[in-house]
Length: 295
Image (cartoon, rainbow, N blue to C red; front, side, top):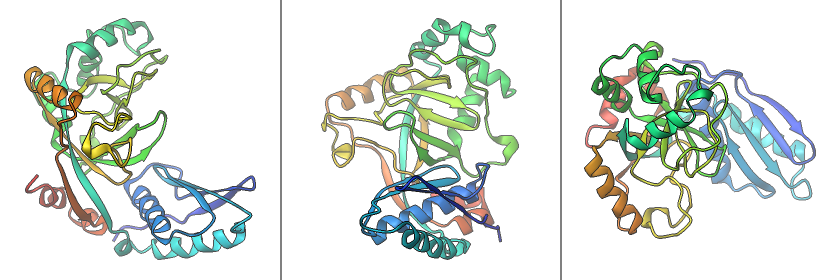
């Protein structure tokens, strides 16, 4: 059985409590942060104004006129103790398909435009740089490796709708990793797929950024127009705890899906599942295969 770290609590001014589960990102810490913040939302404790889970911590903003800091801290410690039992970490999550056009001309053009800011200037594209840094010489093998496993949405932030994706079911040496730009780009196209460290992100809109660009998502992860039925309840596609599955598409399918998105006809492929971290750590890739069986 895996061990869950002990949480450290700190007050931030009069309105915040910061809970640090560990200093390093780990799947165990992230599952605990997701389980605790999910439980807090279910309890709807009066006075809590905002709940922000992160990779290995979470932040609570509260109204001290409604709930005292010491009372809220007691709640947090009680929930923390409950969620320190691995069998109590079960999460209700969605699996969402993300179609990606890898090594596309749009991100290639941005890679060339900001080449001088990158860590190595000797490559034609960010895609080629990441591929070589991870020991791949065959494009299709790299795409298969990046899209084979599903990714856990471990946290959100940076710009509205940005979700950090961490690969599930892989050994550390199997995870594709890369350094970020030496100096950030001043622009990145919306829906660009980037890699930084072990994390994949999809830029929700045009913005500065420093992740290596390897493709374009055909679907939006942020939409304020209300035209997409699956994004009418929230501008953001991602929810912390979601599992995203990348599916490689060619240029033709990319443009077909993009047209459906722009016309408001696209429906995201989704599946709702109960995710057990305890079973995941016991079975790893076998559990992931079972979870993805009919998806």
